[in-house]
Image (cartoon, rainbow, N blue to C red):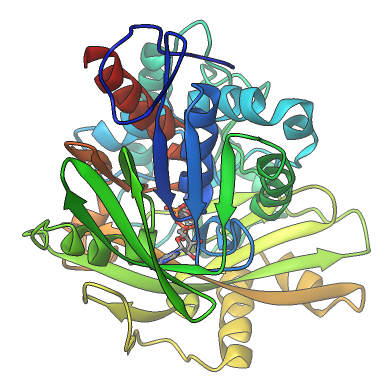
Length: 430
Ligand SMILES: Cc1cc2nc3c(=O)[nH]c(=O)nc-3n(C[C@H](O)[C@H](O)[C@H](O)COP(=O)(O)OP(=O)(O)OC[C@H]3O[C@@H](n4cnc5c(N)ncnc54)[C@H](O)[C@@H]3O)c2cc1C
C-alpha cells in the first residue's frame, strides 16, 4: 500500500519533487498508534512514534481478548449504531493489517467461532438477542464493500440457535437459556503484537521513540510542539501534525493542547483476565460470550491458548479522573489469587469443563491486566448505561491536532485510515 500526495503546494513539510512529506508525531504505540504509523508511512509521511514503554503494544492492546466484533454483544443499543460501527471496523481489520504486515499477518492465530450463551440473568430475553443477531448480520452485509473480508468466514451467514441436545453437555442447563452459533472470531492479540513489532522496526518512514513519556502538546506558529521526557532529560520536537493515540493518557494530553475536559461522564475500568496455556489437547470448550450483562467470555485460540474473563471477578478498579489513578476498588477482590479463583469459578458455573482446564497439571495460568475507557456514568449491569452504546468514538481533529478515542481494538485500523486520509487531504488542499 503506497499513496503519495501529488498536488504541489505550500506546507511546513518537506517537498520531494511534487510529493509532500509531512512530519507527524504519533503519541502512543498501542494498536491504534501503530496502525496510524503504518497508514501514514504508506502515504509517504515521516512518523515519530512515541511510547513510554520499551516496546510497542504492551498495554490494553496486548492485554485484551482480541474479539473482532461484529456487533453481537451490543444488543442493548437498539439504534444498532454500535453494531454498524463494529461491522465497519471488523470488515476492514484483516485487509488493512494484511496490507501493512504482509503474509505474516495470516500466521497470527484466530479463535474458533464464538457461541453466544444467553445467561439466565440476561438483561435481554432470548428472543430479543435473536432479533439483534439477525439485525447485526443484515447490518454487516449493508456495510460491506468489495474489499471487505472477515478472516475467511462468512459474516453474512445468520447466527444459528442450537438445539439444547447439542449444547447441554458443554453448558450448564441451570444458568444458560439458549446458545447461538455465530461466525464471530477473536485474534490472538499477543501474537499480533509480536508481528507488528517486527514489521514496524523495518519501515524506514517510522522512527520509534520508546521509553519516552509525552508531557504535553503546544501550538506554536501553526506547528505543534511535543514536550517529552526521555532518560531523565526533557525534550521538545516540532511537527506538521500530531495524532494523540494515548488511550489512558489521552485526555490529559488533549487538556495540555487546550481542549476542555469532556462534558459527558466517562469511566476507566481496570480489568484482569486469565491467559491460559495448556499442553493437553482435546478440550471441548468453544469460544463463548455470555450475554447480556456482567458475565464473561472464553476464547479458544485453538493452539492450546485460552483467554478467560469473568467480569465481576476481573473488574478490580474504577476511576473517573482525567488520568486513571487511585483506582477505587470495584467490589471484586484485588488479590491476584482471589481474582484468578473468581474468574474460574464464575465461568465454571456456565461451562463446567473450565475448572478441569484450570486445574490440569499441563495448564499454566497468567493474569493479564488492562484499562478500558468508555463514555458513561454507570456500569453494564444498568440497562440504561451508556456503556451499552459504543459508537461515539473515533477521530476528533482540531486543525493539525488529532485525538483518537480508539473505543475498541477492532476499530483501530479503520480509524487509522480515517486520520491518515484527513492529514493527506488537508495537505492536498493547501
Ligand atoms: C480486558 C480487556 C478486554 C478487551 N477486549 C476487547 C475485545 O475483545 N475487542 C476489542 O475490540 N476491544 C477490546 N478491548 C478494548 C481494546 O483493548 C482497546 O480499545 C484498545 O486496545 C486501545 O488501543 P490503544 O492503542 O488506543 O491503547 P493502548 O494499547 O493502551 O496504547 C496506548 C499506548 O500509549 C502509551 N502511553 C499512554 N500515556 C503515555 C504518555 N504520557 N507518554 C507516552 N506513552 C504513553 C501506553 O504505554 C500505551 O502503549 C479490551 C480491553 C481490555 C482492557
